[in-house]
Length: 117
Length: 115
Image (cartoon, rainbow over all chains, first blue to last red):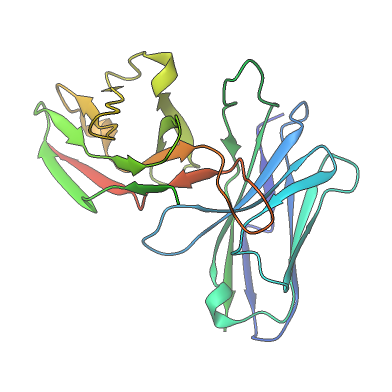
């Protein structure tokens, strides 16, 4: 296990097309997070899962975005009818569950860079 | 709403000089603060967290609740410290639909150590 992996690493698409990204977390991690990072900004939280349950979604996650983690292992993030404003780096992170009031370290993947033409 | 502010987009210092990367936050509760680092062509990784109170690669950061700051410091910069540094905060945020456990990041500071 070499850490969190994401596929593809780069995606170029035309406006209006649908795209899907995959994230494979560290195997024993039950939490999985999606972030988006645009140029000159820090990562922005989109959503997270604990096992297969999607527990939180930020207001950044419009109706065109959907995320799944069907078996509590890998996750997919789909963007429908892409817009140029969706161009960004999409980061996935995983962690163990918080315990004892201590926030678990999030381990990040390399990201998927999306370019919408 | 919680917010993390890193006022410097770019910080350039000479090797051997002290480094201080500034981070200020706003949060109504008791946050947990982190510094993440991204070296060239590498993924984002945790550098240190305030509850650990440890020094990593010579860096330290002290949480000052009165000033709502979590500045990152190193007494003598090394060339390998050149990277993007992000300050981040965890806490429950009231998004539409409930709270969230994601991290809130600042915009980052690009640290360049000149030889």
